[in-house]
Length: 350
Image 1 (cartoon, one colour):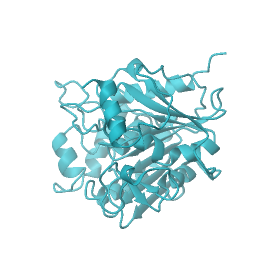
Image 2 (cartoon, helix red, strand yellow; image 1 turned 90 degrees about the vertical axis):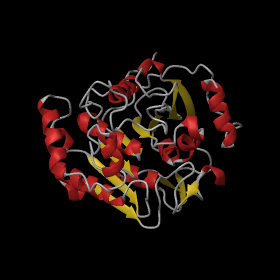
Image 3 (cartoon, helix red, strand yellow; image 1 turned 45 degrees about the horizontal axis):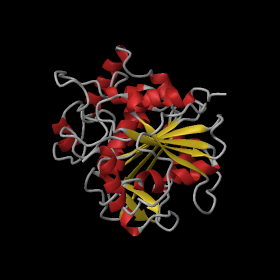
């Protein structure tokens, strides 16, 4: 099945085929929008959470805020699928050793493959985990929080760890305020489905408020703006899907809006669940009233990555590398994502 037909099938299965979107079989390139660079955040769930932390550590000077849902410490897998499965999802091999991760960070820093400690210390960070998560052990979210606390200048003021009991693995949404069908949401306690969890939690709003200060509340109705598909071919990297998504609020086409990069988790890309994640995670409603563009890059499935995860264990790097650099500035997906941010920060055409 070709990519357009696979996407059409996914949209049909999720009931999204009739929803209008600025989409074409050959989507346009990612636009130049002149977004500001001083209030950029990256938020990710599960594998997207691991990738979000990799981006923030690699380029801390480019981000003001980091949001991580249902994921563990930076570089937890250390290039090993075995560690990813046994120590960074389950903890049957124990929790990762913080000392080992710090040695890895120090080595990268000596080689200028990550950002400096001073820039990292200035981040604001929001960490969330569901207490009933049986995919990524909640203890790993606590381990990430402890890791971040050791890096931040004033962790009591910069870091928030939130654990909600009774919630499974995924991204919680306030089911009463999103325009999603029941089939597009997973069970709050058990997770599953699209991994958008039908809870009474607006995690998107909570994260943005912590990372960027008080936000103007969302307006009633559909978010005022445009959800666009764009061609990811300009940012060639192993694992990326053909097209990504971008939410542009009204008035942001001419520049001077802020930016949030939002990274889906495994089995949450458009190839698998259509537009459920990019439409219904809650970010667009807040972005529309706070002049914030939201970038939704997409990963595809493959033999090496059957669930469509972001690369947090090294699958997208050269197979001959004993120590893949996926969690550094040299990581192929890290480079591609930063190139997307660079494009969006370029001035729009006259």
